[in-house]
Length: 249
Length: 249
Image (cartoon, rainbow over all chains, first blue to last red):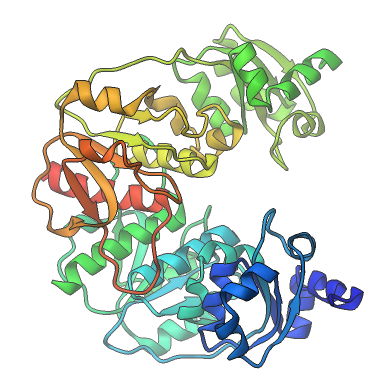
């Protein structure tokens, strides 16, 4: 039975303030819920339809989480999806955990990427390219925003991330920082890059002045037409593709 | 003076049915309005704030369109932007014009890309990479949807497009068709491609079975992690970047 209090509680998690207070967030849709169950996140509560329960009974029962059977209508009324005939999970946030830079992987750093859809898409791209570490400036969109979770298509379960002061971290790491600019060197002409950080800037302002001194290589995606810029998630994907092309061969 | 009838008329253009009936659409935001004025689209009516009028008086007066001065509040009430302190234009649609395939450029073909945000983003990517010709299956999102116009960031003014039966067209063109698949050859290993068509499929179903026989090269973006797929606009950008890298050098 889905109680009024549970409904009320999940609805508070639509707001950042309450997510932070409770240190919980929610995940919608069958595919993402299965991915979060299959990850190191701790799932506290599952709302599932009869159909989803029957198809995934074994997986669901192997978890400790409380399971409530609900109707599709109830699922849709507590979540943000227009249509959800499968499941919703209430999940514990992870603590903000610092990681060290290692030599064997690229790190993506975001300097105030504000749009949750962009952040979620970038997480999915990172996961596609096998990039596990992401650094976010304090003003970057919130990882646990439902739109970020949705856009990441389950990839949010497979990345490590840290929110912090990028200046301090770059200072400590002292490694190559490849910055995305509109007037840098042509990324197509880059030779094999040292493993370092790919730094992407804010949607309208780009990389902030205070981070520029840490950028060792300013890079640009060559344009051949008249568009002034590319969306930050699109640009991140192209950078990752170029880096992987060079590093893997 | 902004009359009630004009308000009502612009609001009908939020719906596809009325856009088709009137053969008109609207463009919001100062930058996009200036781009449409600077294009071969015919602008019929301009709603501008005093501030936008003063900054762009010369450009505005060189056009034949009717100009109405309005407040920011009025602009926001007729359009779809949450915030718009500059302008909105009512513009005539172009007729759906067929083009022939030429040897000197890549054509992007979309097989039922349904999401207007994806279509707009793909138009912006095409413009960035200097790709002027786009082919859309009949079920692809509508070019004049306000979300397409918005996501294209003005690039909608610089592309030629045709909605039609892709089977018939591919049959007629008889040129290489590079199709985006999850199990094709690695795009990083492609040698210089002949000029042809880049074909991108539907968001969930990919390229339809009936078009598969026309695909001469199945291509895939190599993944190194665990994400199952990439968003179609992201994938289009990566394909374009790889094609341009090969063709331009």
